[in-house]
Length: 380
Ligand code: GLA
Image (tube, rainbow, N blue to C red; front, side):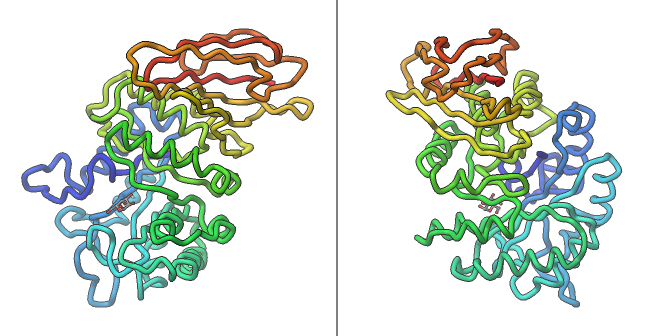
């Protein structure tokens, strides 16, 4: 969990005209401060991650990566110290190719050097993108860079874009190797600031769940990309939907939003402790889409506690319809696959309503708003 610059701040390098929003030391220090002072750290957001566009266009004389001298005047060791001083962790972006996606130097040809550089800056997290490289080389290249990261002796979370580039080029990713070498990986398109983008991601993870879901588990996660809650493109309902679905998907929760201006109701979604607890459930199972018909979807994820071999579940009822009135969804617990004869204690995770203990034959009936959802915890 943490904050990542890309979706909201992109490759804005114009610190002269836009000093508050350009990719710079100042932006990351400001977000670090706000993650702590606005209560995000207290609910679990921990990593402050730089994305693309932090580099000088040329390596140093001795071949080292150099942060942009004007925008990161104190260097990244200093910035990393600052982040650590606030009790948070520090992440960085690079690319297994000749260039990053925005055209800055990539790691190809410098794997050892760059892993050492990151360790020397006390980096805790590396996102390794895949532009300007051949997807066929990734089966060797991503493990090789991971090897060099491990060789430094500094624990660093390793975020890979390996599968998504292979899928784009028509290959089937070798997920068992990806699971072995990466902590998280992107499977699908970049998220953009729109409901259409969010829907396309939800569909991808639902339609491909048989290939994707089994790869998730503690220490290795599918990454449906950043949370865009609090930006321009999602309504309040749609924002609640992203948070609920990301929790069902056991997704990394990386916010990409301006924490200086986010409205309180969006902040409350990002800080919903009950939904974060579902996302971070220690079993680490990723949920599945168990029903889809007529614009209504039901997604379910097995979670703790497990009582006499019966899992508890987080269940989201999603309305993808566009007729402007809520849709009724009525389903028994048994129809959801919940069969503990002792029943389940049922709780709404947004509304703070507890329905008490319901038996498998009880019907739950909800009115789901267009592009909204309900998320319940069924505790075994
Ligand atoms: C790719 C990645 C994005 C972002 C950009 C940066 O598109 O998928 O997440 O890192 O590159 O250029």
